[in-house]
Amino acid sequence: MNSLTVSLGVHSPLTPELRDRILETTRARMEEPAYRLLSPEHLRGLARLEARDDPIISVYLCLTPERRAAGGWQSMLSSLAHQTLLKSHEAASETIRRQLDRIETALNEQLPELGRSVVFFVCERLGIWRQITLPIALADRIHVAPRPYIRPLLRSWGEGDRNLVAVLSQERSRFFVDHLGQIEEIYRVKGQRIRGMLTDRVPRDRRDVLATQVLKDEARALAQMAEIITRELEPSYLLVAAPPDMHAAFVESLPKALVERVQEFAVDIHASSHAIGEALGPLREQMRRDQETAVLQELEEAAFEKVAIGVQETLDCLREGRVAALVVDDRFAAPGEQCAECKALFQQAPGDACPICESGKLQSADDLVDAAAQQALDRGARVEFIRYPETQVRLGKFAPMSALLRY
Ligand SMILES: [Zn+2]
Image (cartoon, protein in one colour):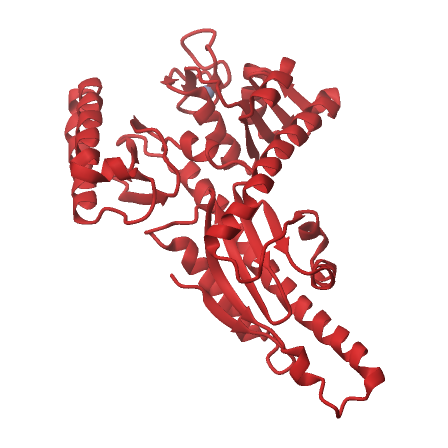
């Protein structure tokens, strides 16, 4: 999808129609199958999927250039399929085989042109077919379970990995989405040519006042645009490059919640997407580190009753819906058990029955972290993976899994 050009100025204000159009195109862009901007809403939707009788098959396939050449992806997919079918029960293997064949056919018909990974979540009985292309390489795997396996998506996609970028100037502004390190221009805005407006008919002493007003009006319209896009995209940060007067007027017009997410950087207004990506590199890195440090600080400073420390206590609080933020050392993975009835998670259940609801339907969970992350998303909690070695060390007593609580 190409970027949309919008004109803003004294004679072309941000009308309700224009607002609707911006909203619509932002939404459409997020639904594009070829290069999906995975929004938190998409992830929450995935976390809600569940198929009790017929499992959901999650397939992660790396599509690096080497993989694309000479049938590389086909041989990886068939070897993963072979291993999966060996492990599955005979009764289930027929439907699994059919689904995997369908995925192979879909990729043969149209291999995504862009992207370094493709991810599928499919379930025949429930009619679920989700294909997501991502600009990053994720490890290959096939996972068969009642719920989709979303941990690789979540961990590669922490805070700071999805930003709205605004490169602003009075005559021309541009909005970009920065998603998993991939930059894409979504709007170009034609602004006001101030020089043309200040003709000799405008008294000299009025010129400055008029120029300031024009700048302010334009900055306000740009701020409103940013707000509309932000509502749809739920970006972590709003990264702004603008001359000082424009920057000040723009930030002044933003709602307070957005102001807190503004980060400044510098780049030329005519820079290519690639150059803007390069300019953002150090800032992105810094934001990720800062985010991890901030989460850790929140844990350290939280009142005793506002934190769950350790794996089982965190799992218990998740079940009770008390978790505001789930914090996990990225290296941690462990199998566990889950009650099919009440969804309670256990590192190790004390007996054969669920200690919460007494159901006998305890099932093994391959990855407690994935199951916990799904529960957290289900209940509107944040999920924070601690990925930097220095923050992982600082986790201390909160390792490998803890939570900030709502109550
Ligand atoms: Zn139970």
